[in-house]
Image (cartoon, rainbow, N blue to C red; front, top):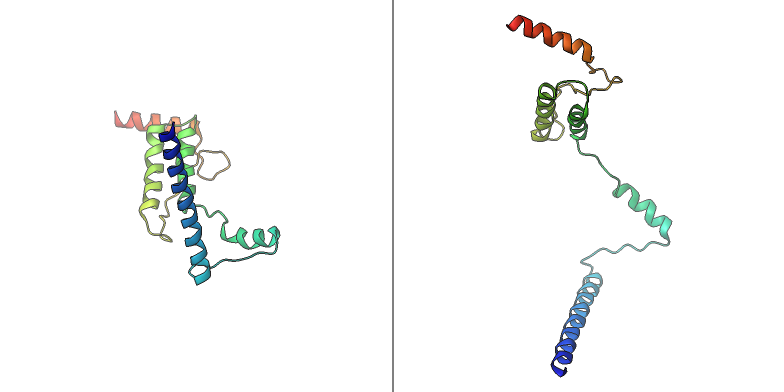
Length: 134
């Protein structure tokens, strides 16, 4: 029983020394000016100043990824034919430098978009291509 108590007290002393060391290092960095500490009067001032800094900035290729996911989730259409150009468009965007994204069109399969391809006309076009190739 005594061995357990001594081991426990040693562990407790070690933890307390670690906490005290972290607090001392923090106080030292603040007092020497290594870390800039801003003090706000209330929560409103804090929220106003940090809101612009912490605002979410979407990735430059998010729309191309959404385009690819829309192609995958589409019930009408041929996934084997549609995913490849959408993936190629997203991958080209990811490899490009910022500001030099590719100008390839999106393949969003919703009726609201300009790039929407009607499934009925797609089926007739696919049949026509198959008839010509045979």
